[in-house]
Image (tube, rainbow, N blue to C red):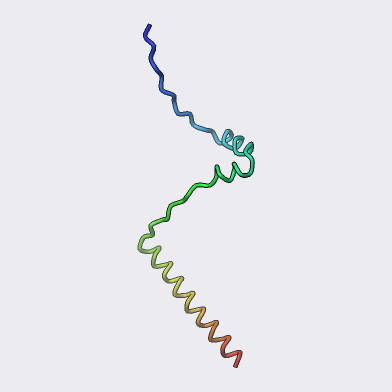
Length: 74
């Protein structure tokens, strides 16, 4: 009889199993288990336009508020 090595199969973790495991961890272990880096997202044209429009609007509104405070102070 020939003995062959069997490759371990990857078992999928069900949601209930994962919840049970996470609930049994201590606080510092839970933080380490949940912490994973999220890479920066590369924004496309319309997203960049919206962000730059919001930046310009913020600068404009800061100027308006500064002007109003200056006028009220004098």
